[in-house]
Length: 257
Image (cartoon, rainbow, N blue to C red):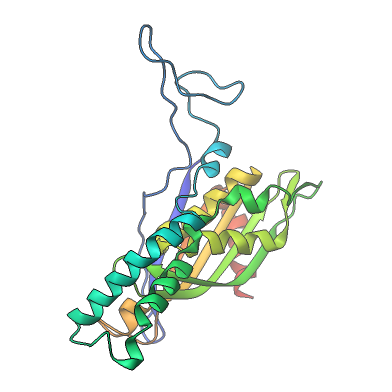
């Protein structure tokens, strides 16, 4: 399935447009083939042929990269790293106001990145329903908080999601949970937008999906160019949202209404 991503940074005073594609996420995962005499092929779902792409449904099942046990094990080293940062900034980690700061900061960073502990399949398995509905479903203005992977400062804003069902619908709150899983990681907005759209496509196999994110990046607000009113807008359109201008325009009109 083809995808379309649009990125634009918009200032309240001087709107400007641009486009870009972030290729960090691939909806299809290749399986190793087993030529004659070589090692056997990796296990595949029933019906999949050797050397063919795995069904898109498979790639959402292998996402968790950090466990609760990992958090407990890594907390002391994270706290020690924050102690080193405080010293590097010329502060005294032993003064009263900073005694517990390294542990607080380490715990907070683990929370900010808790999306690494979650898998989409864990929250969607019991919330996909067979339903004879083929009209657009939209959930807009979903609050989003993330962390810029380049500067480790916050990104925050709103996510708008729409999809055209193909005999299956998703519990509405699960769309917000998908946003939470992918946003609570170190991110760039372009990749985040695409990951949300692809996850919905993999889970539901709908006729089309559209995702738009409007966000403020603190790396542009409190450092660097320091543009207080700037916002970054990214979009990913899949399926009929990409192929049919009328469907895309309907989606964009509804999220702006």
